[in-house]
Image (tube, rainbow, N blue to C red; front, side):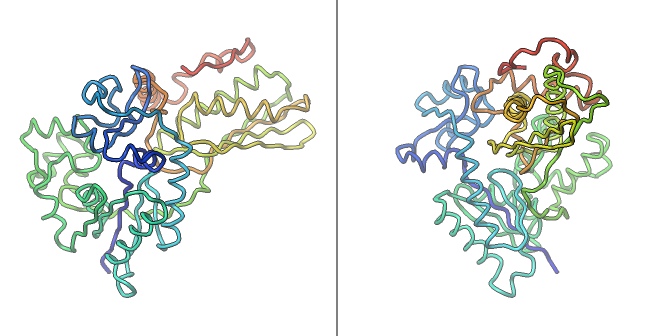
Length: 392
């Protein structure tokens, strides 16, 4: 049986949510991100994109390109709320779906043709999302995730597109190679230097040549250009979590040492989130006393995977939790309600300098191991531990 894979993408999601709150923003250029001169654009409206503005651009440059734009800091709590509303609609309507990010979904509709028709079902789902949330959404429908995602992008804004079975290569052929997911800036530049600008040309290059130039990634490029993608729709659940615990050989009440250990745990888990391209929306801290009584405290948060944001939450939870002043046998940290996402920093508050710093740290950890770099507090747990600032 041939597959039917639906891809849904909420158009300019952050901007669309802001426009629901303030209709005066409709039709106007909008920038969302850090308000300072060193801030970064998290999202922008289609009107702003016409001036050359794009996500992750320094806010100073974006305002120079589009001086008439309205600049908004953004509210991740509100965006998370609307994301969950859309998730609930999708959950009610389709049997198997994957939440690829805060504003992006895949659904496997294979076999649904005999009931209603996959395209009609997709159209009905899109209209239900629009009606119940007020958010514009586009979709693409084809035999695999790759072609569906590309067709969604071609259907934007607020549109829909179906690629009939057998027409996948023909659909991709005339498109720029920049339209293929996961082709970054450097790969794009190298392919252009090779004279490859269209997907059709990329699809005709021998795999041996692409593997020589790009390694195993080159084979993946060839498969994408030829519309080959057998990756499954991964069933979505918010119950997934990652955690770590530390049991002490000698029970302790050394708060400085406990803080240092919790910071180290949080650093490691936050790096694991970024490495696996995940975000967390719930933080839990656990302690076990010497009498084996165990207590935990958790907090719902906006989706994030940054060290400094998560460390602050963990420290606050520990302060609320540790009130018996008894010897502690174990401490633990857990991140749950995980969703896919690559928002590596809080683009509403963090500067491009901090974003670059996180990227550099992750590169070092990827190359030399998780222990290659860490905060000083974790290296000197017996010393004085000052309140952590909003910087590394």
